Image (cartoon, rainbow over all chains, first blue to last red; front, side, top):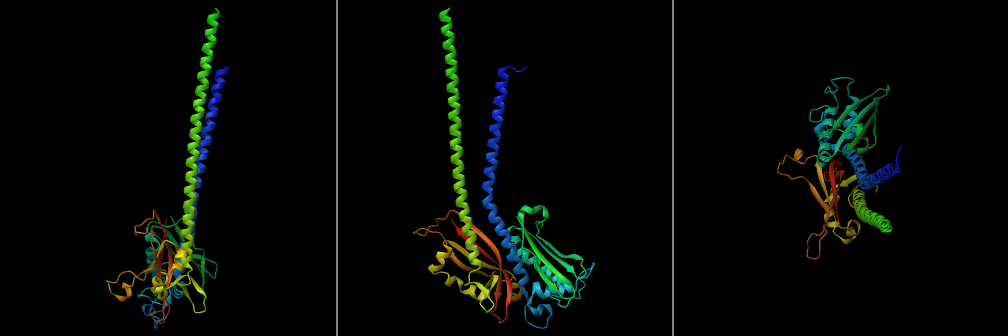
Length: 190
Length: 183
């Protein structure tokens, strides 16, 4: 049987526990609100950076003479070169067989795109300490989908486990005659 | 006997008095703790608010730069291209943006554009050529004597397309625009 003093002691302990819980909750809310404003800026920056980088990469032109086009008209990387790559992309390894229409620096269009995109992304995004992942996939007319490129930063890509810390550029589709649809997306994460 | 009873009551009263004083002491300690905590919380909220306003300003200025007609590319019909700067415009931007009208827009800030791809050495073969950097706008926060008075500089970087029509045909390159805002 509990004595009145024992009961009083128990009540005091319960009171103390309640106070500790309340203070802990207050501190958690404080930390959440303190971090929130910074996060808004980070999300905005990542989204805009992903969109602007993707637009710049696809708009980038390469000198026509470098690709044996027989003209000095600059060729858009995200249009002519990527289209040529998709049209001459094999269904299994080796995927680059040196038979693309354009041979920029004597390389298959796919190899040239991959190398150029890697350099651009590392120079523009990688050097400011951000991680990135460029996914280019081909949706063939038959319905099957395959990933053509998966370019990741030296520090690692942006896997789905980074969901709260990564933002994407959105899908950039490109219709390829007699082949299907090419979809590109860039993810940037901290 | 009566004396002993009185002494016992006095002792009890003393104990109760000590208890009351102790409770009051704890109460005031808790009250002080609460006031300090509330003050710190308010201070931190105010700092957060200031930080939020500053970061919003940085974002707004960056957005204004990205869509500034004085820098952006056009296709001739007046329609501007997203995230694209015209190199011919960039060459003249530093002089143009010195006027006070732009100070009202950007305030104390620095804006630079750097070409990151292609590395011009790749095509010119001139290894001594430095990276192409255009200082577009530069107003550092200084006092009347010219001493730097800013506490913090917030930099935001975006990747942009650089359109070069100096050779008579449109070539697109990749650049990085850096907008630094002073507090």
